Image (cartoon, rainbow, N blue to C red; front, side):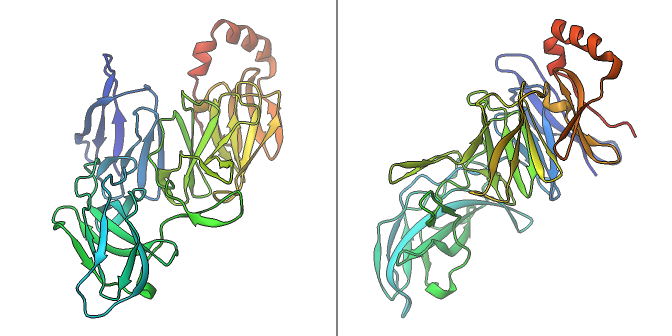
Length: 367
């Protein structure tokens, strides 16, 4: 098992590196001299990968095979062409093609981009498809493969081919039957209750200071530009975050949540079946299972969270402990309890004199 470390070098801009120490104590530099936005990071282990969030503009990921990359994959930019191929027989119908970029490690797909621009519609003659003007120069160095998806007669785009970036060729010729097309691009349920392809589902995670896993999705908060927002990832894909609203029939569907009163998020932690969203005064909770199902409500207008890093689940009841402006507090199943006891007046005076120190507080469990 590897141990990860980060450092901080003041400058303009501030920079830092990521180091890894193995079981025998050998220290190796894995990521060197990248811009640092905040000294303190959130590290989350999920499905054998480690995600380092908050320190750098884009989260860094140590995948299950020990490789490092920046989270997310940027989409292709060129407009592909789609014309009839040269096979003896094949599908007929109206086809629209889309290209994506993919990162694979050890044969496993780690991340995928949003689709690039759509091709013009091809009225297929039953001779397969010839793809041209494809983008073979991804903006992210960790991209290893490219994919082509096809929408037939208005259906959701489904996988037709995958090729390595290292030896792409200039064109791709394929003759995959409509019934044999593979996985589809992500879909969304709009405000009109109709399903459609979601072209932004696999966007790059925005810069945020906090993150937490809740029911197989990553939730990100602490965006300095929009401190009231909570972004969430695609299920099972922590690197895929939609940050682009879609307007349908004059109604705009926002792909993020916002605090109930518009106040900045100061902490984010799962507790039982709830995702607790701390604010300096007031606490919200998020519940739900997937995109379009998440809901956020206020559960306290009195308690608040001073520091995200003070939030810890511990104790025999797995209660959530955190530092409130009033002092140390616990939460469990809808009930708050102040645990400061006789130090309440001391805490009040100390907190008023040292608010910045309190915001840097962190919590640990001493068993």
